[in-house]
Length: 406
Image (cartoon, rainbow, N blue to C red; front, side, top):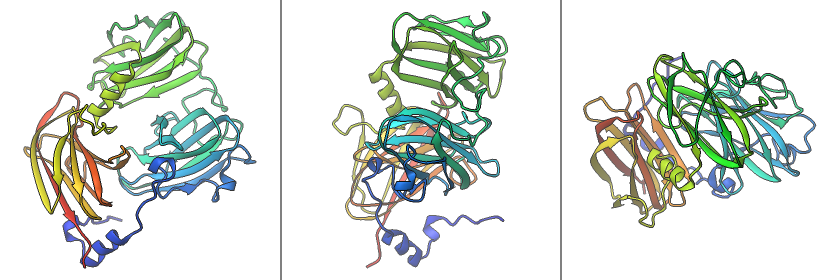
C-alpha cells in the first residue's frame, strides 16, 4: 500500500498542536538515548539478562529516522549477544549505549547478510540498544538480547553457533596476506589483495582505514586464531574505519577486505596507533558527534530563531556546525536543499549536552534532507555536510519554528 507523505506545512492546526502537546522526552536513561525505550523482557526485572532463563526478544518498529530502543540490564558482568534481523529485506543497524550515554559498539552487517550482531563483555548496569534502518525508512525487525549460550537470531559472519570464533578464510593467516607496516599506507585492488596482515610488538590501541569510495570497502579485523574483533563498512561516506580503543595484545592480526562495488579499484589501507584527539576531530568533521561550545571548534552562531532563517553555504564532506537558540517549546523544521541538484546533504541535530536528537539524509524521493523535531527551549547544534567524500555543493539551509496555538 502506498503512503502519501504530507509536507510539514500541510499539517492541520489540530495535528500540529497534537505534536507540540505530546509529552517531552525523558533525559534520564542512558543520558537520553533511552528515550521512549522498551524493556526487552517487558519489565525491568524480566530484562535482567544475567538471570534470564532464555534470551529476550521484541519486534522493533522503526519509524523513518526515529530509532527503536530496547532496554536491558545485567546484575553480574558477562558476555552478551545483541542481534537485530529486519523483516522484508530491511537493513538493520544497532548501537549499544551504557547508562552514561557512552557508545560501546555499533554494527551494521555482522549478523550475516544485512542483519546486525554485537558480542560484548559488559559490566553490571543498565543498557540501551538502539535499532535503526540503514535506509532511513520505516521498518520492523526482530531484536534479541541473550547470553552466549542462548540460541542465535542471526546466521552471523562467523563459523560457529556460539559466535566466539571464525574461520579466517583464504588470504588470512595462510601466508597470502600482504604485510602492513604501522603508519604506512598501502594500496591494492581487492581482486589482487583480499587480506592484509600486521604485527604489534606491544599492546597497542589502533585505527584501521580503508579508502576508495569507488570500491566501497568493507573491512573485518581478526586475530590469527580466528577470533572476530570488529568490522566496518561505511564510517566515512563509503570508506571504512575501525577504532580499537582498548589496546590489542602483542601479536599478529589480519584484516579481510571486500569491495561492495568495484573490486578492481585500488583501496588504500592503513593501520596506525589510535589517536584520541584525531578520532574525536574526525567525528566532528563527520557530524556524528557534537563539539563543545567553548570555542575550541568552529561553530556558526545563529542566535535566537524567531520564525524563519535561511543560510546559503558551500557544503562539503567536512561538517559545518551551527548553534541556534529556541526561546520556547515548539516544532523546529530544518531543510537542506542542494541548489543545483548535484549535492547530497545530510543534517543532524544535537542538544547542548551533545545528545543526538534527529538525523536525516534523502528525505522524500530526492537527495535533499529534512528534519521536523519537537524541542524544548534551549540551545541546539546542527551539523550540515555532504555525504560523499571529497564532494562540494552549493546548499541552502532553512530553519523554521512553529509554536503551539494559544
